[in-house]
Length: 188
Image (cartoon, rainbow, N blue to C red; front, side, top):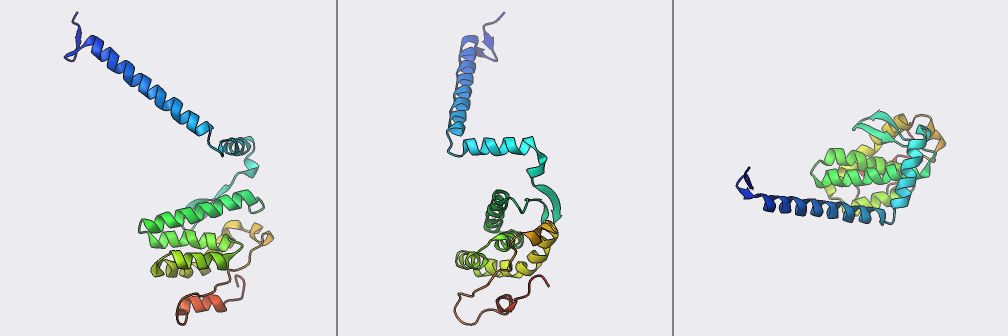
């Protein structure tokens, strides 16, 4: 029997394996401690347990224009808020990655779900490039119909007013924005 493993001293190999194991264990303990001490840890655990306890409160999958996405229960404000924030974040990430069309779909979803659509559009007008904002505005009419289909009859129960659009740019608004400003009918 030899005292070497792949040309290394056996005791050095055992020592290195022990140090690597201790480092991995320390890494696991550190991140578990960090996870447990997070301010929203208990809320996440409660939400996860509620979701596992009954599928009645879980969002359901329905096909949408941008693929399958989770559709929240319109009567649950926390699910609607999560869906809204998810759409804003996903839209911004897609636009930052250069996928303007798909990002505009998600931003338009968020605008249509927002109770203060006009203010949200104003914020996006200031933060997005002109091309990106124009893509969002172009998506709004189709988004109204798509969200009505996604939420079905439940959408009628929720407060579902079309966004009020106010143009904040210099000069006259572009024709597409002017159409949205003049549009007062609701999904008809």
